[in-house]
Length: 111
Image (cartoon, rainbow, N blue to C red):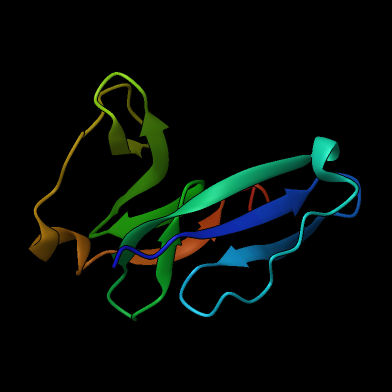
């Protein structure tokens, strides 16, 4: 069964919250401040340290940094280079497993 997990970045409080996890049916939490939040979905992938990869995460592979984004055109996640305009709609799973989450676009704007 596919895992559905969501987290939210509260823009006002500057805090990340887990709001839903289908594997445990825990944290079904729809905050009142949802309109001031950015919702991110779990991609179903994990980085080299076993950490779950969500939309908005910043990953590092060798010396390059990528932002995880949803792309409606392909109906999937892309790994968009931070310092370039070219996107990579898919990496093989072996490459993703060697990437490391170094932050996200909300908590680590300096990345």
